[in-house]
Amino acid sequence: MNVKIIFVRKIKFMIFVIQNILMIQITNYRGFLLEILKAIIKLCIAGFLIGFLKSYDAIIAIILFLKILHVIYKNIIIAETKNWILLIGMIVTGFGGMVGENWGVGNNYWKYHEVSKELPLWLPFAWMLAFYFLYSIESRLIAFLTNKTISNKLIIAFWLSLLVPAFGEVITINLGVWTYYWPYQIFGVPLYAFICLVFVHMLVYGILSFICKKWKIKDIVFT
Image (cartoon, rainbow, N blue to C red):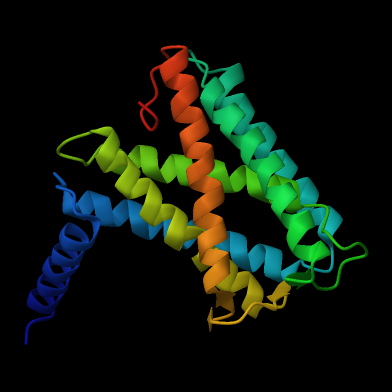
């Protein structure tokens, strides 16, 4: 069978899956899938970077901090329209993530390896960039929605919060960065972790949606 025909059939199958699982109408499935593929590649690079440098948490912290400075510079300092919602989301996620990390490690639900302290230095920066990563993906995927309603945006936010962070965790966990001690695991990520990740990110989503509504701020993701 012609390779091109096989490829087209696979694309059509992926389109069918996306349309039925996500329950949304998309204008350009090729562009939609391309954005997802690019996000997966970036996530793999970040996961492998943290995995291979896990013994040098200060170096990872510096790299992630510099990335945050770059994000702030690009989206606030030199941007014509300052994206303060993005910065607020990063700060809130970083704070909420660290509260969860202290709770989880303190109760021996998971443990980080090859670090001098219980929590790696890079952890708050990773949480902040996790929000930026999800926000960036969602803002690009929303462009392909037929109907850019809040309900459709919530569907994308939910699936991204459920799958994207967990995929990154699969990479870092299997590279020995940390270990979960909760049961019912999928490639090292327990069911409870999926629930916690969705809870944190959707809670931040709710907070930012409220802020945008309260102060009439227009945002591609939250309004």
